[in-house]
Image 1: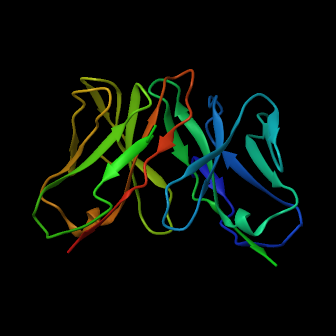
Image 2: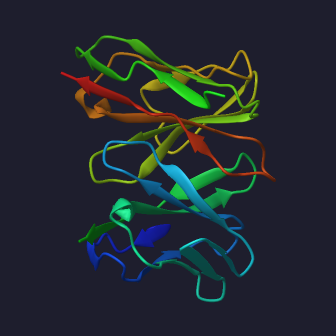
Amino acid sequence: RKEVEQDPGPFNVPEGATVAFNCTYSNSASQSFFWYRQDCRKEPKLLMSVYSSGNEDGRFTAQLNRASQYISLLIRDSKLSDSATYLCVVNREAAGNKLTFGGGTRVLVKP
Amino acid sequence: NAGVTQTPKFHILKIGQSMTLQCTQDMNHNYMYWYRQDPGMGLKLIYYSVGAGITDKGEVPNGYNVSRSTTEDFPLRLELAAPSQTSVYFCASSYSDSIPEQYFGPGTRLTVT
């Protein structure tokens, strides 16, 4: 089983719609969780950190379910500029802050 | 602040040659990392450093070496390049274990042929 698993997509989303997708992780000792976005041929950029039960940042909401070991990301009122690959990231070990990256979920927002 | 900068942006290397990828950060971060990303794949940790003079191996260290003589710089050395090292290399940095968010440089696209 992969340490961090994501549905690769693509999720084809009409502009203005809501899209949500999950990520599962295998290490129950993980303490830090993040969503990054990565545009084609660019570096990953931090979208949001996910602490405790979850948090919201504008149109983006992240939820953490420790019991079932999954994290979700919801995007409301999707914009064309939201088209990207979203990477679920979990810390493997706190010491040294080593992270494990999922393979990414591709989202395509269409007019 | 420039954040994390990497040079070069692109490079073509012949099999058996060596080269150094440069990475510099100006955010006063203690931790620095090197990742590689192959097409359609997730990022894999090559090496990391928790401070000047301290480095450790990640998941895929074979064929690479690093050094950390200053807080700002974390160069990655490829010795005897092989086609399997064709990849995009990202450098990242973070402040500490308690402030774990990592910030990435723009990447170096390396082809070994």
